[in-house]
Image (tube, rainbow over all chains, first blue to last red; front, side, top):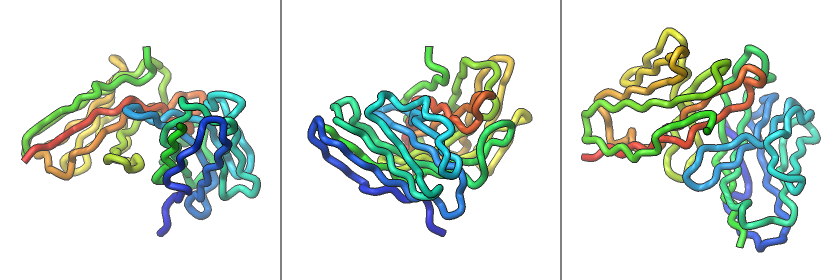
Length: 118
Length: 111
């Protein structure tokens, strides 16, 4: 079946420009996650949604980063006034059930959006 | 100190070799552990979960040592197709959805 999809796959932005990154999770998956992966590093957690509720946004690096999932399926990560340090791969992941507590769900990752800020 | 640490490598090994990676974690209350594989410019994919009793999947064996706070991955009879970056993942008790990744260990299997 279809996996997690993300668009665009590549984005070049000028410093100061706003960007929006889209994630389509696996159909029926309740939980959705965003990660940021800098070159040569492992992914770092940004935020977590359970359906449309954003339950954890502790990893968002600044108030320029904003994520939403208004209908509990597709999610958008928006970065305002992009800076060069925002250049990274932004990965979206989803899992079937609500995550947390003792229940650890496997997260399935999308191919990522590679953002380059010039 | 990072929460999850891995030797970045690269580990260059000949086909057929056995190779092992370790990953150390700092939070003794960590809940769950995984190994993910990431090919160049691709997304991470789950390789295997790591259980307290250790577990094996074909040529791959994962071990957890809670006392010393590390997990390991052993690959036997390496194939060219095993060349990838292997990411260690730990989840904290307070938020098991929050995957904490290591930097990853690069493996190159040489013909």
